[in-house]
Each structure stands twice: as C-alpha cells, then as structure tokens.
Image (cartoon, rainbow over all chains, first blue to last red; front, side):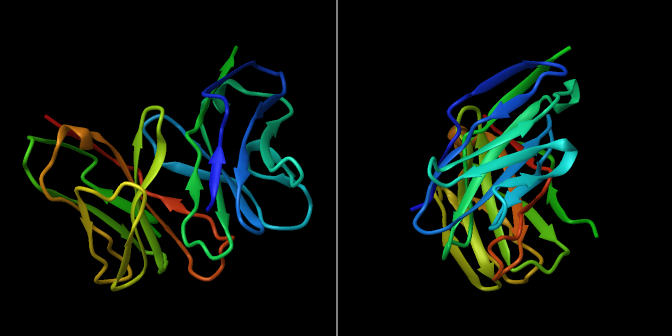
Amino acid sequence: AQSVAQPEDQVNVAEGNPLTVKCTYSVSGNPYLFWYVQYPNRGLQFLLKYITGDNLVKGSYGFEAEFNKSQTSFHLKKPSALVSDSALYFCAVREGGSYIPTFGRGTSLIVHP
Amino acid sequence: NAGVTQTPKFQVLKTGQSMTLQCAQDMNHEYMSWYRQDPGMGLRLIHYSVGAGITDQGEVPNGYNVSRSTTEDFPLRLLSAAPSQTSVYFCASSSQGRQQETQYFGPGTRLLVL
C-alpha cells in the first residue's frame, strides 16, 4: 500500500532564506512522486513531479525537489523564499498499479518579511 | 479549456437533506476523483472513477454516492447530510495509462451542514 508523511504541520522561514518542506513515502515498487501547492480558497496546483531519472527535479516558481531512494524522501526546496510562497504544500505518491495518488496531510509554509 | 469545474462554490444544508455536488472536466480525462479536505487531515479520497461506468470507493466513502455516465461528468451525492460532512470538497481528473500524469483540481465546494 502507498503512503506518504509530511512530518511538519508548519514551516516558518524568513524571506530570502532557503526553505525545505519535508516528505517521506512508502510504496511497493517504484514511486511516482508529486508536490502540489494550495493558496487560500483555491484548488491544488501542480508544482513538480519525479518519475525517473535525475534525483533533483525542477518545477514551477523556482521550486525543486530532491528524490532520495535510500531515505524514501522527496523534500521540496527553494534557494530563496518569497512572502508570496506562503501557502499549503502537499506531497503525493502513487505506486505502480495504483490509479489514484495518496496525499500527505499538508505543510503550511509561512514566509516572514 | 475550462479545466475542472465544480458547482456550487458554497452550500449550506440542514441535517438530513440531500444534494449533489457537480464536477465536470473538458480535457477528456479518464480518471476522476473526489476528495474532502479537513483541517489537520489533508486530502482524503472519497470515491474515484477510471472511466465511464466504472467507480470505486476510496478511503472515506460512507454517506456518499457517485456515478459516471459520461467521461466529462462525475457528480457526488450526499444521501442524508450530517454535520460530520461539513468540509471542502475537491474534484480532480487525470489521464489514463500514464501514471506519471498529474492531477488537475477544481476550485472546490465549501459545504456547511447544520
């Protein structure tokens, strides 16, 4: 069975500082990994995904994520945070043979001016 | 393309009332799904469909029914609303066969059951 964990309910970072939002997963076989962002009163928007290939995946709005198979992690990163990055971030995983991904509980990112 | 649309945006129901949340997509996606979002619980899968005429239960299906008569539409029915169904509901769609395809989400329906 597929599962995903986001260990932090909230991450606080100062504008201009690097940010990391953590995600770990559990699957049978190879994982397909995703990050989505949700702004207030909006639906989720796709940020990036890992299917295969390079462990560092680049996505929208300057975000990137690092796939680490040995640690079963897929942490979201950005070198320099913006106040406008403040939102709710969801990690999702789908394993081979599964139709629908499983989402984490979400991490609230707050970027302080 | 309009993408994934949901109606209504907001609804207030009394306990015991029934209603249908509408979801439509114009991307010819085979997969569609319904989630509910509650504080601290993330997104939980209610029902999903892998094509017209085919539906299956997700993590929290009790109290909800779905049908998929066309590729475009995937309505969610609340049979007898309960306060525990107060939530924000999201519909999503994605392509079939390529599991790496991303999901496209609607804007959500905010439901309050009194």
